[in-house]
Image (cartoon, rainbow, N blue to C red; front, side, top):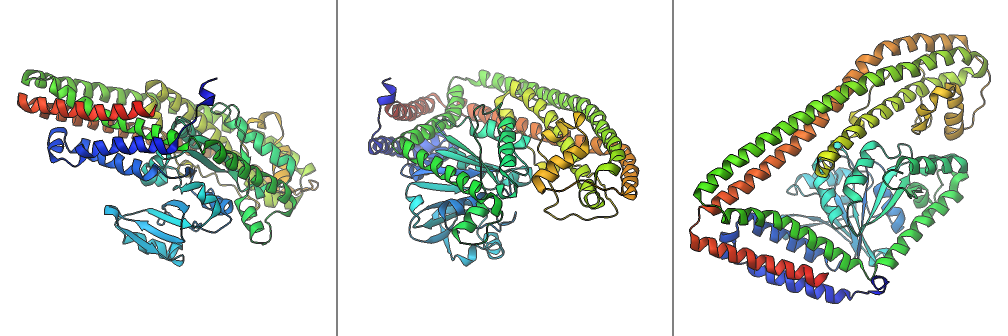
Length: 585
């Protein structure tokens, strides 16, 4: 095929780009054009000029993203074989970290081109917190290091995703616009929540020219090779509808960094498997760098120019609409806009009612299903006498019951959110981009104890999604043996203690009574959060409509000579941008 034999001259692409941007500078710096086209157009041209010029000569840009506390920064340090990015972050010290090649330096980026130099010691959480408070609201760090890998790639370390970090969602979105490749990091303990799947589907995969690498972290928690394979299969199965041929790489950033520092490995039994996995990740990135080295600049430039045309196009559409209107048509446009807004408000209210109905339907189904699971627990409790040691019951059974119920609710809520997501996707793909949830905010509190036993971090286990799915056909204690015995640690199941069993059965009855109020509360929270996001989407859309009409009305009132000058200005600007796009195709 001819397409496969086409090559690009990166320097020529940059020359064409700079020539087009220089022509647009005539518009940006001429006050006449600001008066004719308006502040919004000129401000957007300024923004895109800064972004494009900044990115045009960058090496391949890899954006690392994922939910909060998934080990993104630790993974970057392990990839670079150097502790560059701070890992002891809190919600007060969240930053967008640009890690690039150059002499060792750390800087906070301020507005107006200003920067503050930092020492390595000032990157630590407690010191960085105070600096960020006094740095004009900046949250971007540029970290330069003479690291060999960074000669070929710049890495963007993004804030965690999730509703609790909503203030940083725009930072993540902007980073993705600059991405030539994306590494999505998830925890193997909580693999790919419904929120993470939404994000991958709506925000990453639609990015044209952007390669995608799916990485599971904390794999040192896995006990053996068979469980490692099973974990990979679980992740692949979860995301099969989005990425049919997904090949997740399960690594341990902690293990790799400890190996580099000749420190004790966190799981000696798994070190060979983890070595192989991390090497696989390195090889994948090396291949990516090699394959894209001749195409990264053309691909990136085309992507950014396309975004520029789309963004400016929204403004020029409103301007051109205003140029067509006389005073009477302007009044009709105001009336039409009012009618459109009323329709959009009705749509928003209709969607909210749909969410309420779906919420009640799935809440009722969830109550019945979780009640069935508790019934299974009650039946299974009778068999504990013959199969489980007192120590096992005391240490594991309570946390197993709580986490099974938690996982049951997770599956129910994921099902509900997936249905809402699909309904929104039919209405508008843009709606789904605004639809996200912080899993930490939808966590019902099921309380269950055995003689007030406490559990260590190592005892607690996040079950894979198919635990509950298989519960109907498998005894719950069998699942305890399989998951706690197999993944947490190997344990023998043998003796019995009637007192513990009696305590369990008594509390299971209490769990039955708590199901309805607990799930009612959680589903109400899910429903309200979904409706809040839908309302925000429609409010933004209505605001955009008002802005467009306001601009059109303003232009419609100009005299004919000024209108002709505006037409000429729009035509001149569009001609430059279209020529730029055509020359780069």
